[in-house]
Each structure stands twice: as structure tokens, then as C-alpha cells.
Length: 489
Image (cartoon, rainbow, N blue to C red; front, top):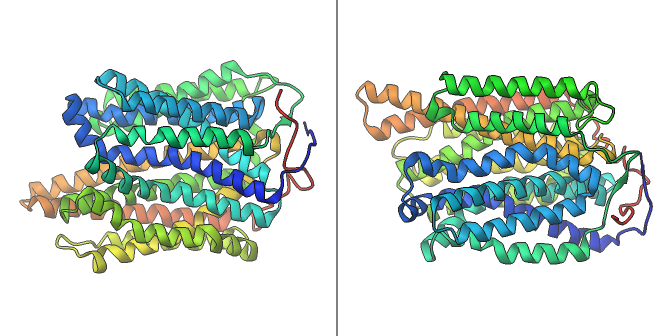
């Protein structure tokens, strides 16, 4: 495996390219939350049932989670830039179809195609950034920008969704992607270098791709429907069992084929393995914070959707301040372990504060402190997690590693949210059965879920701080290599 040399990308152009990449990723991140605010309007307009409405979210989650790994590997084999452009085009066209949808079927199918495009973009964007920025300092800064977009975009989505739905209608939460997607495509053609690692082969392990994608699709389907079907129901357990069997087949195939989709030796990279476990736990905690705190603000404190978005603004500002500069400085001074552990412990403390939120809560006293700590923790920790996951990976497998870490975050978030929502519902049902008022029961359920989320974040901090190698080795695989490689044929 080698990298073909070409002209270096000018310094200023690298940062413009990063801005374009992050704009594309932001469009994907926003879509995961902006739709949630519009769900009541979609339900009323297209006459969805409660079960059918869930598929507006689940169809996206299913294809997004199922194709992250394959999308990253295809980027390694056929060019990260080419796959990024394809993913953006697919996502933008699917957004048009969503916005023009007049039937339930059209909307659900278009959402599935959106998820596929989003998976490809998310899987290869991180690889492009890793190859654009090869020195530890610049890479840490670039990862900070990317981390802020990923972690802060969800909160912005709630604000944007409330504004668009209130001022126009639900169609515009999708149609707003058209000018953004078109701009990203045009700017990407001018600014993104055609980075490509020249491999000894370009063979796609079809059997491995089919088996692991099927395993992920089945696992995501089982998780997103777990609450509705019951976690111990025959359907849920059966789907999880088939997913486990497909994954076992995948591992057996990868151990035998000459050119595996996922070289199993990749998991012997300790930082990649630890970062993925840490990412699963942290995503579970952060998804719980975002979705359950939004429910607390709306159902208990009576906030409107736009007010919910504004309530997250302080956390976003804190997150931006640390992600866009201070986190990189901390990584360069202390390495990856200390900032990661410190950030996750701060996030755990923020969740613990939410676990004491009362029925008659006030924003300044009961919401803002937890928001600030979670924004601070996320702003500090996201950068080191990404550097730990990607820093030791060779260039020819950066797309695959990106797909793996994004799959870990997605699966951790989906599974964590499902588990914590179940905990909240069970606690609320118990309190209702004991004769408590509806709001008291709701708050009791949310408090239990927040407390469990705080334990998830604490465990992630202990694992990351204790098991990661002390230095990021951020440039170990790329040092001395030009940021631009051969033009894709």
C-alpha cells in the first residue's frame, strides 16, 4: 500500500475544504433532529398512525446505521472524495423527494434513501479531514471543528426545526437542504482534493459486505422497535439473534478471505478499540440528555419547540468555544487521555444535575447548570475521542475506521436511548400506579434515566482515561505524506 504524491494543498485552501466538509456533515446531523420537531405536523398532514409515524425516523436510522461501515470501506477502495460527492448528491435528491412527499409511502422511502446518503457522507468525511491535516496541531484543530459540528448540530436542528415548522410548514425542514446540498457539491468540486491511497488490490469483499450490512440493519431495526415490540418479545430477541448469527458469519468470512472488507487486525489497535467502546457509552449518555431533556422542557415545563431550541443555545456556545480552539490546545498540552476523561466526567456531572430536576423547575436554577456542564464536557471530549479512534490507522483504512467509529456512536446512541427511554417509562408507570400525578410520574422517569446516563458517561471516562495510550500518535500514519494524492481515475 502506498500513497501517490501530487501537489500539496495550500494551507488556506485546506481550511476552506474543511468548512465545506463540515457544512455537508452539518446538513446530515441537522436532519436527525430537525425532523423530530416537525413530526406532529407530518402526522396531521399525511394522517400517520402512531406506529407509522415512527417509520419517518426509523427508516432513516435503519439505512444510516446499516451502511456506515460499507460506505467507509467503499471510500477507501474507490476514493473518499468521489464517495462524499455521491453521498451529498443522494442526500440532497432524497431531501427534495421528502419535501415534495404527498403520501406516507413516498416520505418513508425517501427518508430511507436520505439515511443511505447520510451514511456515506458521514463515513468518508472524517477520512478526508485526516488526510487533509497531517500535523498534530492542525489535525487537533480540524477535529475540534468537526467535533463541534457533530455534537452541536443536533441542538441547532431543534431550533431550526421549530422556526421552519412554525413560520412555514413541515415540508421546509427537508427543502432547506436543497440550496445547502447544491452549494456543498459545487464547492467540493473546487476545493476538495482527490485523496486516494493506492492499494495492491481494489477487490470488494461482497460476502463480507452483505453479511455485516445485513447484521447492522437487523440490529438497528430490533433496537429502534424494541420499546414498541417489547425487549423480551419473540420478534426482538429473534431479530437480535439473527443479527448476531450474521455477524458471526461475517467474522468467519473475514478470517478466511484474501482481501477482507474489515481486516480483523484493525481491532488490535488499542486506541481504536477503546475509543469505540468509549464512544458507545458516551453516545448513550448524550442521546439521553438531548432527547429526554427536550421532553422534560416540553411536557413538564411547557416549553414550545422554538423555546426548547433556545434552551440548548448556552450549551452550544460553550461547546463551540472549546471545540473550536481550547480543546485542541488541551490535546496538544496534555495528550488525549486527560481531556477525554475530564470532559466525560463534566458531562456525567451535568447529567447528574438533570437527575434532580423538579416538577416546577426554573431554567436558570434547574436547567442551565446541567446544560453548561454538558456543553463544556462535550466540547472538551469529542476531539480526543476522534483522535484516539483515527490517529493510529493507516491511510488505506481510514474510511473503514471512520465507518467503525461512526457506527459505534450511532449504535450506542440508538441502543442507549432505547434502554434509557424504557427505564424512564417503567419508572413513570410505577409512580402512576402508586397514585402520583402525571407530571410527577414523568419527572421521576426522566430522573432515573438521567442518573443512568450519568453512570454511562462516568464509565466512559474511566475506560478512556485508564486504557487509552497516552499519546495520540496523530501523525504516525501520515507524517511526511503530502495531503493531496493522485487524482482519481
